[in-house]
Length: 348
Image (cartoon, rainbow, N blue to C red; front, side, top):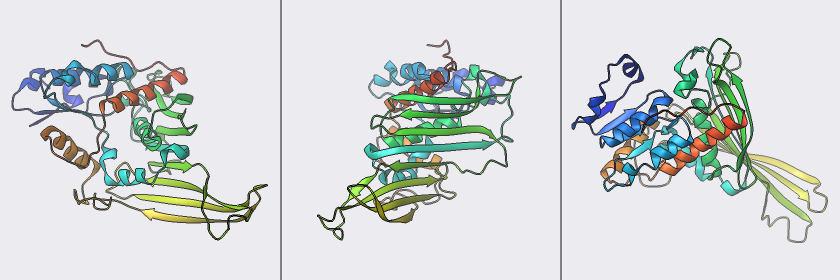
């Protein structure tokens, strides 16, 4: 049995804490406001329950480290703890990743926006004490996308520009955040997270792209002593990866150039584009797993249950260390922006 701790019921006192001690409950799903994740995740783990924890996992990196390296998780037959980054479990995202060459990515960008009509300025998403802010909401998807595209952690946050919530509301919260990080290969990853875009400007579906460094490829038609070279720049774009079962598209765009080696003078250019989609693991060129109508949440829940029962699945998972690194990257943007990192809460 799954216990779903709903934040509205929690605030009104309708959730009795002793419920998590009920022997009939195996799993606790926590979609509470961000600032309450840590407390209830620890309480649930102490009660011996498996925990599916909404993203971002905690309020900051210190809490994430304390939670995901908790002694309870090191014990024999420890409960399973998973940060619910549902997007990563769908075959579409995994197919997108296979098209990348992470060490050779020059730039990567991720966009996630919401209409200004969706959330009021006093929404729980904009309450600092509840670990609110755009970077902590839609921005967490963008950060995950960058980390997955580069396949590693950033060296530093080099730029972070927030748009603060309007005056009269919580002035410690960002309504939007644009940020850039430098990765170990020298590549730059950037995000555009906005929870209040006007309808006139809301033209971008959630998407991400990776542009690779220029690569010289073998071209027998040029000949070894021609003094010419064939170079290609590859860009991979994923559109609507948040819920690809509705619709999605992956574009693989290659810009080809024939040029003189000595002076880099361009002789010829052309572009090729290939479109891809994936709805099941069969599309991903492995054994048939799942149904084409499964939403991202279903894919994630299947893997969560597989891990609990010790069954083989797709192998997709969000490790404890990944969740810690995720919060470190988010904290680095707030620090670069000169903002206060989301607060920890007094609970052990």
